[in-house]
Image 1 (spheres, helix red, strand yellow):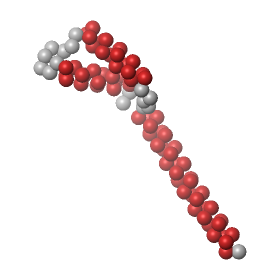
Image 2 (image 1 turned 90 degrees about the horizontal axis):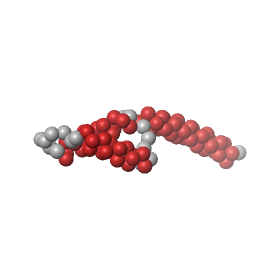
Image 3 (image 1 turned 135 degrees about the horizontal axis):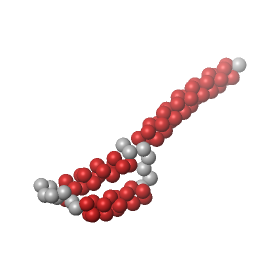
Image 4 (image 1 turned 90 degrees about the vertical axis):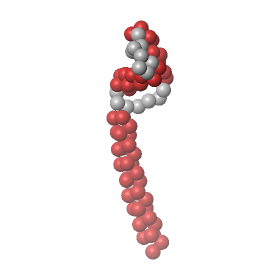
Length: 83
């Protein structure tokens, strides 16, 4: 989810919680809430889903390489101890 989509969803949910069954919040208040929410989100250390998925793929490849190296090392150690 992109930051703007997240912010819009947050404001929509806030609007429905604060004013259930009433008129929507005024545009000036919504703009102030958007600014405050954006400032709060900017302070958080958030990553996009794409960045998260890319890092997960890197971690998976790294884990696979590590397991292969550990297996190779065990085979080499076994070969040394057999001699």
